[in-house]
Image 1 (cartoon, rainbow, N blue to C red):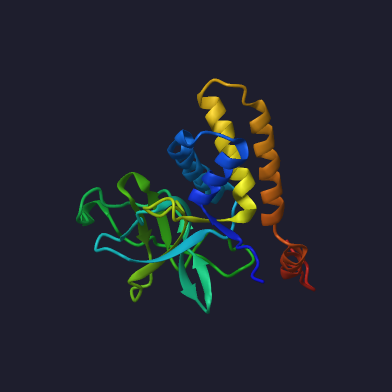
Image 2: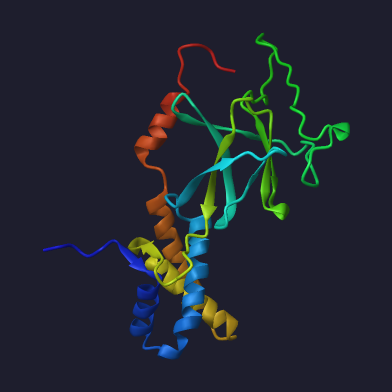
Length: 233
């Protein structure tokens, strides 16, 4: 016999809540909107497996455009030896305010990094490049990329919700958290007693965070990765 699916649609999440609480069907669309907001919050703050990677083309003015479903930046990366190499955020980059680069103001010029390999060497230099967030203009500025690179990979948090909304799938492990989020916000917006729903919501948040936390093996491997037989500074 087949096992119960570990995924549910947002429609199923809301239908289950209406049935369990014996609420009227007239609450459906309002609860659906709260469910969408609750799932976005879960993606932003609690779930680790819902990030997305987009391969984006670098424009003529050294920018990449943010995807439509973008809600939060994680990293801009390039592939190096089979792994993602993170580009460093650098707030001091000079960038174009329009659609062309003004060389008189050094817009788009590569950062000149100087470094040594002696004992006095410092960090903070990224040979693969730098980025600056420009979310107001729906883009990210890139700088000092290798001349052969025409694309950058963006790792980001997506809204996680498709246009239909109801057809969006969520993991069953977060359904109780989302349902108490709906009840909590619904009571709050209607000036009703909400403390009980709030407390239950945060109890469910703690459960989800426990499930999403790194495993003992991950902690152990991270610890082993910094072990050496030589003195460390």
